[in-house]
Image 1 (cartoon, rainbow, N blue to C red):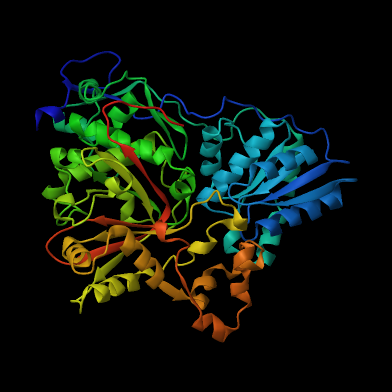
Image 2 (cartoon, one colour):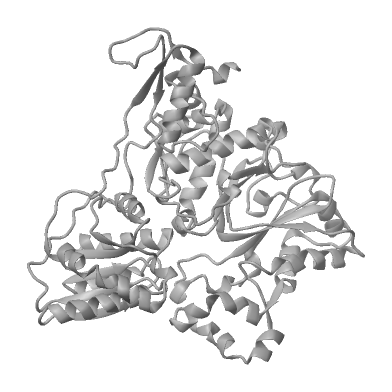
Amino acid sequence: MASDHSVDVLEHEHSETPEGSVQLEVLDPRPARHGGQEPGKRAPRLRTLENTTIGLLWNGKANGDVALRTAARLIEERVPGVTFKFYSGSMPCPPDLVKQAAEECDAVIGCTADCGSCTSWMTHDTTQIERMGKPTVILASKGFEHDVEVSARAFALPDPNYVLAPLVYNNLTEEEAVEQTVDLIDAVIENLTVPRDGSSVLLDEPKESWRYGAGDAIGVIEEFNKDFMDRDWGDGYPLWPPTRDAVARLMGAVDGRPDDVVCVLPPGNGEATVRSVAVNAAMAGCLPQEMPVVMASLRAIANMRPVPRGALMSTSAYAPLVVVNGPIARELGINGGRSCVGPGKQNEVNIRISRAIVFCLKNIGSWYPGVMDLDTIGTTRKHIVVVAENEDESPWEPYHVGLGYKRTDSTASVFFTSGEWDISIQGAVDAPQLARSIASFSGGNNSSGYFTNLGGDDRFSPLGRLLFLAPPHALPLANEGGFSKHALEKFMFHHGQEPVDRMIEPIRKLYADGKVKPEWRWLFELSPEEAKRTTLPVIEKPEEYSIVVVGSVRAKDLLMPTRSRPYTEPVTATPTLKR
């Protein structure tokens, strides 16, 4: 083992340590506190629902409105004088709508209806209403209860009121949604009228350290790994022990005190300090000089606007991807050339940084699968791709220079990807035909980029495209075709089009529920023949394309849809807090 990766094994027994001649002490990777608002308390419950006004807060998800209206009808049958107001929102609901519901109603019922991000955002909205003094209850589905609990902690109100339906509302017919809501009404009324103390799920508080014992060094490492993996603090691969010495070495590579806050990490709003980042980086086997890149990547995720909580919590397969630019990539040996995505000796630095980011998002940001990351199937991209741009073989300015940085600056840029296409082109007639060939891959999956903003809510980022373009394609496009990066992005925008009938098919239910922007409703009024003949670019604006030169030798490219606008942070040795 290299000296920077040495394992600090304690060769003595102590009455407070586990049994075994070899002892190991490691630090806890979780945050000391969760950022955001000051801790709040739930609002007082109502004495009775008689003669009250109850709000029904809908986030736009299918069958959520059915569940809310069913609950209202059944409560109305039982309670004299109760009235209801329906509020049609989004994820999250606009602040003005949340405030309106709190001002106009004595209590509010919300429904998640159900995915990771919509569950967490409904928890956010109801915690805000509780802070305004009005009691709430959430209709959630079994399997999402931990998401409600951890989200409430993230929003500093760690004791939410919710009831669990047995099945996911979004998967049901309207009749089934009505049927399962019937059995929830007693619990809904109770949650609005009966006080209770404490959270229904206990959330573990972090410790300073953990100790393990075994008969030999290998055994104690195995004990540590088993326990950390059982707690879901790893990624399935063996972990390096985050000993005090290992963490101290990493902290020594950056300017700042251990408790200085690097950023507040979504989705759980955990405060990432220099110490907690170092603990997680130590688990990944990071070298001290890699710490600034890890911190810059985390800051980029935290400083994205809007904050990518939805992309980190969704039941869809979204994942961060990091592109490193500038001298730091060469100094550290971050691969941006051949086979830079995936395993292997050539990617050992990429992988260490990647694992550190994963561990920080999990253990500081609560990005735990099945808790706040509720991806239905998942993706290997959640191991997080980290690459360098291949600036040496690129005919264009580096990605970060196009953003206004100098070539001598080092940066980390984060994209949230939602899939990938391998672009395999067996030769081209000329540069314009090559550009058309590459652009032809830009349609297909996730082509409904126009409609990502439910209810026309502009707080959500539109879908985009990230193209990893290999040098053997970039060179003829630039030198023979005269394309700049920005010109090629505009070209792909205009040539990457799809028929309207394909673009609108996945969102017909949203249109039926009135959740499509008014300016695009005309698409649904076209005849079937017109919808086949009419084409549109798959995303709204040319600037939602990003081109990065990656790879080498063979002309094969990689195109990825993106879920939010990328964000770039400078790589520095100084941790900075930005909220």
